[in-house]
Length: 184
Figure 1: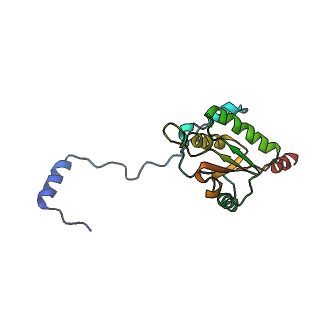
Figure 2 (figure 1 turned 90 degrees about the vertical axis):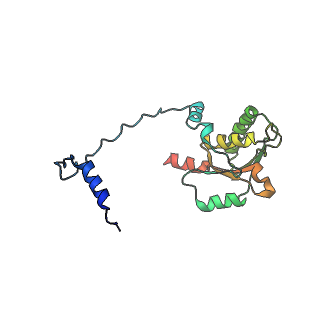
Figure 3 (figure 1 turned 180 degrees about the vertical axis):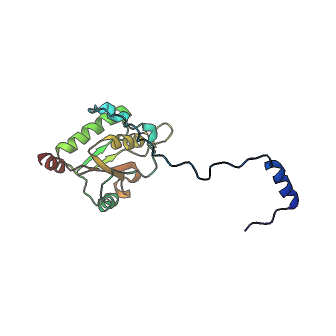
């Protein structure tokens, strides 16, 4: 709903736009299709160190409750993981370790899980009460490291009886599924 212009405002407006000339074009400029952007060629064979460069540690936010899932993981499976309903077959405790040693142990642990065909494992990283600023250093690192691993489908903080926010359940890729797709 517009209000009528005050005569003084109307006179001021006419004075300001008095020397303006109307545009010759009655229609807007036609829409033009833009060219598709050129794809950036990705390196074909990335080493493990190169894969880690694809996600910067600063890009990963670490909240009190951890949760991560790759696309395609079923909601029912994620719900079971969060409830602690999937049995954990192996466990790794990183309490009190340095970040470098914890990373090495985590890599060895995930390799052992793959060899033993483990579907779900638990990693205890602690809550960080023993660190200098009482912040969870290993929790941040584990949150970052697990996102980089291709065999990790999902992970979330454990339920209270299994360590709560000081531990994570890790859902690992089924090695049999990879094997079946390669044979076809």
